[in-house]
Image 1 (cartoon, rainbow, N blue to C red):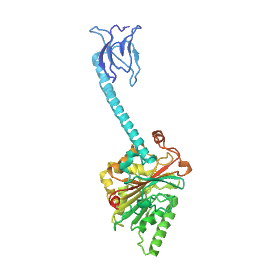
Image 2 (cartoon, helix red, strand yellow):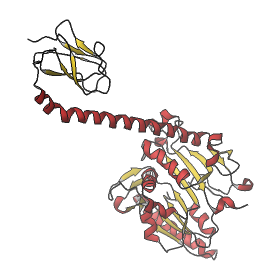
Image 3 (cartoon, rainbow, N blue to C red):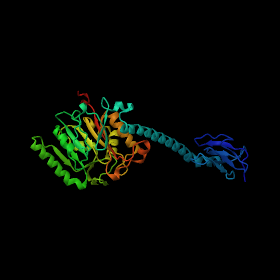
Image 4 (spheres, rainbow, N blue to C red):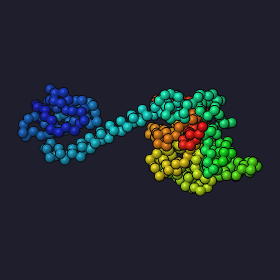
Length: 389
């Protein structure tokens, strides 16, 4: 049996350096040893005829003791290791880059969580309407708002509409897409009284009849007030690019019919020319917002459907019992809405949600998002509305 008399590094494949006497060498038992993550091919002696052995634990910061009795000829070593070891080096590089990306996203998530918990902090001034937000207490909700002249138009704190006439579009050509109704038509009536045609979307099977009746009822009320009857209900829902049509899910409102699920740009394309230009958008769809806005963030053609939106209301769902965000989706939403689209926050309120939904997905809780709240509703505005006196 051959013994190790003079360890020599032939080829290094590990990321940590192989240093003689520190991370590799000959042991008293005649075997070659490696430590500190060193991995490669070694000769056990200085003899010209000495073969080579592979030693070192793969993907480990530890080490290995290797027998010198089964050496390989140099051409055999090359055949066995060229592909495997070089691929391993690439895998390590990919893993390091992925770790750096996750760390950067986690830091970004902590920043945006700060906006949800302490929106008036100086770090967020650029994301708020001028003058910042003032805290309110409304029915146990934690609310911040800045509607000019102290105005707060909401008569109903149970729905997901943020109401501010000062920020609402005044264009004669106004279409509002309201995604997620939940049998609540308050914001729909608000939008129609301010001159918008409404396309209301909801795919909940148990509420379909109620929603069809609600649209008709809202149009009758408009007719009595001598206003246009301009509310259309669509039995369809919102999805991202990666959610296959036909997939079904269940939430606290009921079961979702996945037969007609559309991306936002597809919704706009389906209704184009019907009721005016899309200027108002509300999204409250039990978690579908994450995939939908992630799709818009990477698809500039799809994002063009938001080009004229001035008034945006989104309820963000952060509970694992609904469609929870990934770390990438959470960060992407805020970066896209605030930095790419240029919206500013004028209203923020928390929502306890249904009892089963009063929890926070793990990574957001670790990053600092308070436990026990399922949702956060954001009222956002940009463009002409910000320039009005």
